[in-house]
Image 1 (cartoon, rainbow, N blue to C red):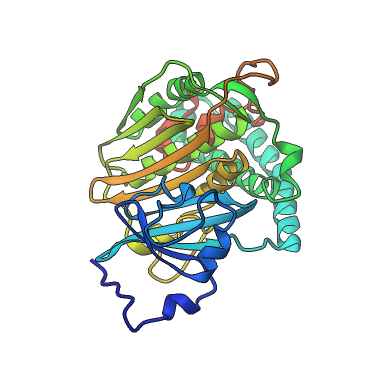
Image 2: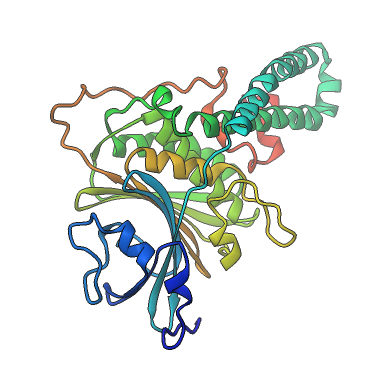
Amino acid sequence: MQIFTLSGNDFFDRVSYPVLLTRDQTVTYFNQAAADLFQLQQNPLKEGAPIPEPLRILEGAGISAQKLDGEEWVITSREVDAGTLYLLRQERDSDEISRARLHQVAERMRMPMTSMTAAIQVLERNLVETERMRNERYLALLQKSYYRMLRLAGNLEAICQLEDGWSDKWYTPQVFDLAGLCRQIVRETDILIESAGAKLCYQEDMSSILINGDEHLLTTLIYHLLTNALRSLGGEVGEISLKLVRHGSQAMVMVQDSGNGMNDRELIAAFDPELNEADLKPLGLGLPICRKIATLHGGALMLTSGKMGTRVTLSLPVTDGRGAAPLRSRAVDFSGGFPPALVAMSDVLPEDFFASEEH
């Protein structure tokens, strides 16, 4: 366990980012940056006060992302000898030029990808049966590569669309049943996860939980979490659990895998897009997209990991549906006519699943 002492050490007093130390759910230390951030809370920070409400979701070691006072923050917590240490860092300002270029790249990918899938279809039709059987593996590889490119283009577009100033054009919240959505996602993904040698288990403590949100975006988020969980198994036989519970005014969606977990550096960097340091594997765009979707809904995303695997918890505010638009059925995902779940999980599915006779 990391040793943490305050005596004779004013390092955290001088840093510009908020730092808090808690023990038994009470505050034992905070710096001026933390005092400034939480000054508008119902109970201002002071030693011995209860832990601020936004931090209660994250107990023990982990990382979460949520909005505080209208700004997006990434919160890292670590167990130290004096209690639990919280470090908060603000989301970095996005680069308008880089965002525009990402959007252009995603758009320009569409045309050659359309040509690619048309060529695959013509090739399949023109091959005689013996040639088809001999080349089935390569045709499946081409199909999988196309789905992966489609997924990448979708991720790039999502990152752009979820940036501040753009999100209102794509975020269309309405009241819907989160439990029904989770059950539908399980029906769409269980055979995909099974094809990769894993088992998907689903639990819910309530048959219906109403929230106000964008059904398509939250579907995308849960797809990403299931894909990451399957990737964490590393091709080994394992189990992925999807669990939905209600905790007070919050709906909690939890995705956990039985993999080997993440090390400290991977955990801290999990919400940063596509890091490629020498000894830190890239985590892709999935979790940064999930973080943005969660905060857009006024929720939080929490990531914890250990020897028993990695768990990601999505917390969303529950609604009673009063004064809201009528309930709507599940939105259609326009993925060029391709199954959204198959596109979302294409990186981690075996090639033979993409063989033509499967679809």
